[in-house]
Length: 283
Ligand code: MN
Ligand code: MN
Ligand code: ZN
Image (cartoon, rainbow, N blue to C red; front, side, top):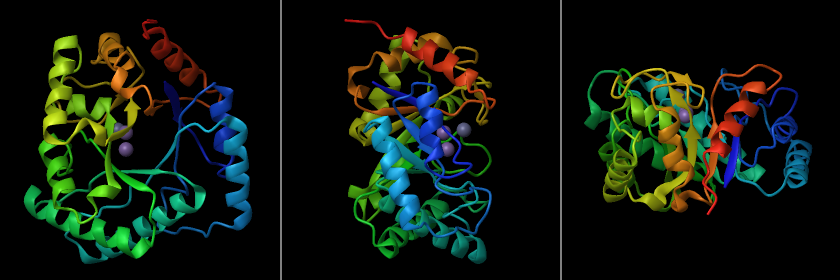
């Protein structure tokens, strides 16, 4: 079982490994650049070497990158779309250079003209970005979203549609965010609800598409379509929901990362990881 957290890269990309080691995590998510800016400074050979060396020191555990929240590949506005394309293409190249196998991304927002038009734009640009990047190995993981506003990707049908219509189906997977899917209306709080939700996912998307998890509890109730993370066991999902995931043998080899609030001392991460580990039933 690979369990960890999203860590800061302040002071250098390799610093994230210091933080994940400090909480005994065995999975990591990072931004590969300042995610609040469009500008992406180049990666030097030194940055890459330092990152890879530190990764080895930690262990060969799973690392995912999350792209910038500024990126909207489904945008109907030409300038926003052009900036998003350039940034996403570069994020793919950075992941491949760093040896990161998964780039987690939200499937964009249609901003008013509907899901169908939004998905069509999204797929066209996603395909072009994959091609323009010249990358070969990094997978794009479409994150399940809460369905706030005009955000795409909050139903399994929409994720399936994106994957089905892409020319690069072999480069696509899913990052399952527990908070978002719950807020989007998919219940996992009882063994029965969990089995049903995952069976629906399997039927529409395919369970093997799940390559990474975001483990977050939800401050909002089932189907309230808001993206508000809570600490594990303190939100509307509750411990029983996470117990279902932690004991699902299908996900034993999949990296799982917290995206919950914390201070510099990382105490909240330590507590959340301990809570999750405490749910694992030893066979
Ligand atoms: Mn996300
Ligand atoms: Mn997430
Ligand atoms: Zn979220």
